[in-house]
Length: 536
Image (cartoon, rainbow, N blue to C red; front, side, top):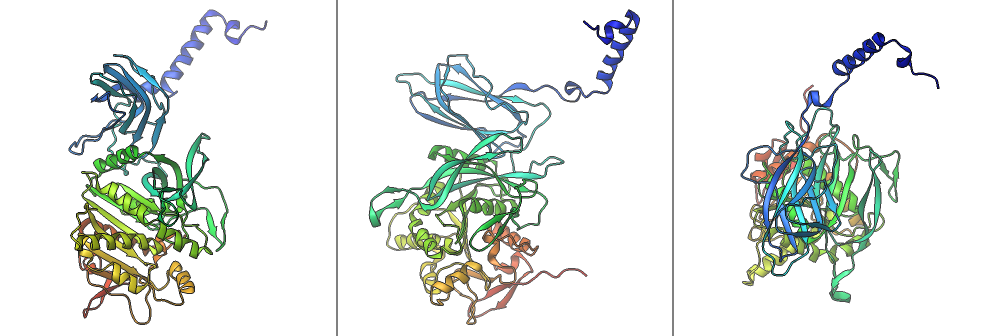
């Protein structure tokens, strides 16, 4: 056998060579312990479990706390008192990511699990949901949540915790949909790992109850994580696609550094959905106790609705729960009639979603943006609530704060009827964005014998209604609410207007920005978006 290089050297040279190697490793080669402490298991929360109940949701976010939260590379559970059998563990992170541990875990007293969802990347754990195997006549148990915490790397629970070098951020979007769920799709991440994403078509979901005309499409709840590139103009939604009227052409692979992408789409139970909602509520700083809901319009896919919701929430710096209500649009330019029927069938789904959200004590206000056909179910909910109250019926409070009607694709007469006495059901009021160049309204005109739509700007003038501030945004275009990839910086002004509307409810609109010009004062004022003047 040929001797190694070291064995061929005499003893003194061996000592010299080994000493040189050690010095090189100490002085030159980076050593993890020299620059950072090792992560250590740290108690995140201890709580009592009622073993007679099947579920337990635990939020690790204390709204009153001002201290920063630790980042963990893994999670483990410890049965501090009593024997506990877990059927499922769901961990939600501050980034909006979620991990499902779908296996039976038997914990005897003082026993602990193996590390759960162990990764190199440290993240803030915001909530843990447990599915427990109930035990008859069992005493209460105590369970502890431990995190493999990275010392000296605290992170505030928010969507703005970016690090130098980051090219994209993540936005959590909760959703309710009456679309039919299809087989999961496989997403290949940048690290080549596979992730299953829930998938939804443009067809109506199976009925929850009833039959025929009485059938009610099933409402499915869930949570998505949308990646948002940091280098883009506010108001824009870059995707590696070109819309060719009847189809969409993808000209390159999507890149999170350049495009909006989906990192996760998970269907959730009602309990899991509310846990996600309440976690975001507890984390909000700028929009405390507020919820933002986007209802898309005609020719929008499920994914597109998530992208637009994330873009609006991100650009408004909306740090509360962002929700997307996605009705079964076929996402095809030629399927206007299909979409018109589908959106009417989804009115009850929106009603149920709003009721569920408003039932949470932590929710104080719900702000809605409805675009194009998406105004149909929103107006129906408002009209029904108003009529029920007028008849003396006892109804639950939907906690509606502001409703933005963006280029509503309903006739002017229907809008006048359904949006009257808006203040009786919407605390702040309504705002109508009208546009003379909305693509969805153009399609509507072709199939409705020229009936003037509420969101249009006809020669006779914009629609004016008491309790609703009308703003002509033709110069900016209402395509910012649809998946139209044309980009121009003026949209940032409208995003700022919406943010200020939701945050302060400032009225008249000209108080929210000099780019909103008062056009006439009587019999009822309205405003027009004017292109901001640029310096020469």
